[in-house]
Image (tube, rainbow, N blue to C red; front, side, top):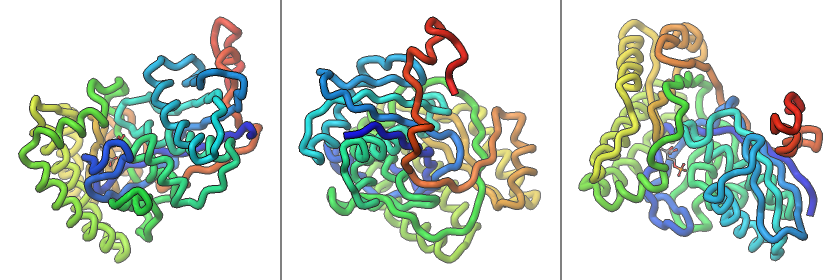
Length: 338
Ligand code: PMV
């Protein structure tokens, strides 16, 4: 075993994943497609701790709470099973976005952890197997393993991985409306929707249909069709989520105002389309040439950042290792954090 460090970026789905066919294996009810960003990264270092009895997680320079530690420990059990070893590890992870705020931090988090842990346990996994492994941490994490625009296939365990598909260049404007941790996790909300919404089966079949159309639109470089599907599918997902009993709502009035402002921009000649994950923040896709002008128009709604297609998860060198919590804890001396 060895100490390793990996980096991964969040992805934002243009065809959304909402609902599982298998809770244990984290198999989706339908495929999805996303854009991996080149911003808001997670960096994770895995340090072998052969004498320790439990895994330890340091998140953003502090010891994580037991719930978060249990979740990564369960994930690490899959890595240990693949490696045929039972060593515990110390995981140090640093996010550049707030954890659990609907900016896909679980995707970048588990993609970085899968990549670092597989290498720490000397597993030499093919890209699709690394994507399958990341999927066990958080479904959408499998899409942060490949570069750029990725499709995550529905299917059985062997078939359910993500891979890059050809697509035109585009930018995404992330409008951060609220950085607070969401009240209901995606995992729990998804389960409730599948169990209670009368629209769930229609959602699954219409997602399969949209995914096929989206892959074709990407291959054809048809930005207009990509955008139409993106916005329509996002609104279908939020409609579906609101139909959960009791209802769950992730969008707030500012989110709706951003969807309206983007529709207005379209009328005035800037072609752009909105989407949102399980939170109030809105992501807008736009052609590269229009990105700065639209970002300026949206800047009144919140923190605005233009991002582009980013790289898949990758290993870094020892120089980029995440420093220990005691080195970043103010009590132990401020300022040592890189
Ligand atoms: O992978 P999870 O459990 O964080 O679920 C992600 C759900 C959405 O972000 C709302 C949709 C998606 O496809 O990413």
